Amino acid sequence: MINPLEYVFLIVVIGLITYWRKALDLFGSIFMIIMGIVIIFTVGIHWLILIFIFLILGLVSTKYKHQYKKDIGVYEGTRTIKNVISNGIVPLIMAAFGNYGGFIGSIATATADTLASEIGVTVQPRLITTFKKVPPGTDGGISVLGTVAGIIGAGIIGVAAYLLGISHDPFLTLKISIIAGTVGCFVDSILGAVLERRNYISNEYVNLIATITGAAIGIIMV
Image (cartoon, rainbow, N blue to C red; front, top):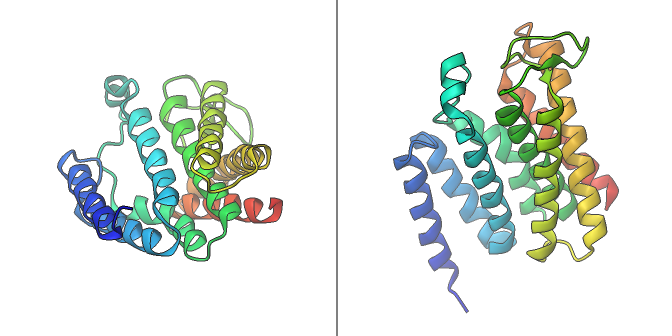
């Protein structure tokens, strides 16, 4: 049996790599390490692996057509501690209380939103409130490609959560991840179109509210 301290060492190494690769800034990497340590000592490594899967999917989707994203000015390279907190604080709280429904729902939402944004931005989006065409990267913009990518991402989280033993009912797990992830992602888009575009709230608050929505749906569905 592996000593938890060995997992802590692994988390620190991963945190250093994410900082070195400029995936996260220094404080974002530090907060990620703290999150990892809390999760290991509360619910175990399997729950942490699910977060790593979200991070990997996010990094891969960020690299998707990255040159095109740079050319049109929407490429998001290094993420900050604000991004980490807004997407990670709700899963952290759910893990600390051992609530697997809220944990899966919040991570599925963060995954769906990230993939929908990073992949959907490469095609012509429409504003979710009016369905009028808007420039790529517009807050509240959605597309068929982005929506499909988001749903697939949420589904991957559900499958992974079951395989990792976080939930032992495959159908319930998949249902939670897809429904919570999809609804949370659309809530993110609606808030982006209605509030973020008018500078009433920032993207970090939008992400936070979306993950809270995903967690709430996951809790209700358990």
